[in-house]
Length: 572
Image (cartoon, rainbow, N blue to C red; front, side):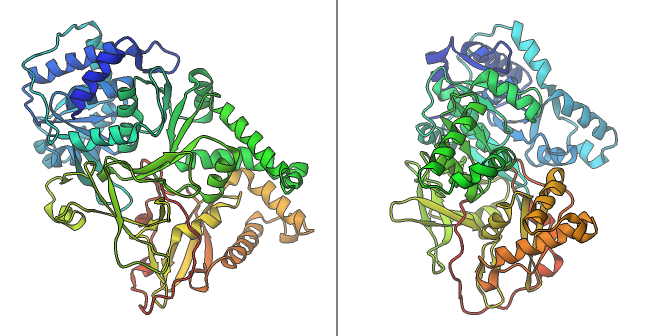
């Protein structure tokens, strides 16, 4: 199976169905998309591109993004998707390392590139002297009027050919070129397609960057395979843009990251459930369940009323949000995967609470030794979806791929008796306590994130201490502190109307309450306010390496593993 075959079958079955388009604009049908694909294929051939040559795609979401992706991969060339938030310098490094021949760039990013190029170092200019640059929007305008018949002499890709070379900074700050073959991607499409239960004519709203494998495979290739129409936003998905789009599109499916739904829960849903009479009624058996189901129905209406698959992936979903969605009957789905696995490894709709679900058909997963007393160990994956390796990097490839084809994910997990996979966190994030105890920072962060005042948190090691950095909601800070003071029979005047001092007292109380829920070795020593939001990856995982305390580099004293029960937190 190749992307070329997958696409040709989709065109044959759905030629007259709408495929790609902007919200509130006339979409391109599958047949029209295919015409543009063939136009670009001819253009690339006329430019002298041969089988396996690299074409980079650096642009924000656009209906034409998928056209370029398909034209390249069915060409058969290799696409190099680049995240739109990459800087021109980062992009230049990718182009050089990936030996890219053509760069297709969005118009706005092209302007940024030209400004950078004017002052670029000579060595970069020399290395990129032969690079051809095409502007995405111009390519799409030209493709409208062209009619190019299918070229019978065009080479067909094989399943082992390299389809995509994907560079991601991940959370380690060390970019790698992940090599994904046609078989990697199409096997994942076929194995994952049954989960969202999409049907021809369904609608999907895309809000995540297409350059990320999560959105590309699950939010583009699967919908194209199933005959689903995908809508794109012309502007970033701020509430003023997103809410009218949801009302207009009324999608059956969406893909998001946890931060997206967590903000909605904490800013819109939780205040209504934790107010006055509703808070009292929630404690009444039976009535509380009904109130949550009503809230779930309202949330579904917010997303257009027809949503039946709300995929959440890319980072950890807060447990209290997962519990609400589960109890409220909202059709959310949790998945687990990595760029190196094309990406999906496990997932399901009708979620088993806190689990990432069952392993996909055709994929094998095992938990490596050594395990702690909870049975958690590194997750190893083997299957047709596992990458071919890191481009021009045999050393790092050998570090994660053993001779039998098992991929070391770097994630910690455990299976329950029914085969559901639970994620414990990243092995690289694991903190060793003073006597060698395993401390999972994600578990502690989940407790901090339950507080309505905390937007996000990060737990780090500083010497022998644990420090929690928290980003607070400044918009509701004063009113929240005022309500907290009222519950204590005080006013903010008790701190001399100094909001900063009141916040310190609030955080001290929060730390005390959270520490009571933790084993002694995993208790937080202090809480620090992070003034700016944490810098994140494309799927909104915090780049931990940017905030590590220098003292944390000192190795903790090792000893016998005395790890006790730690609250289990799913990571998607």
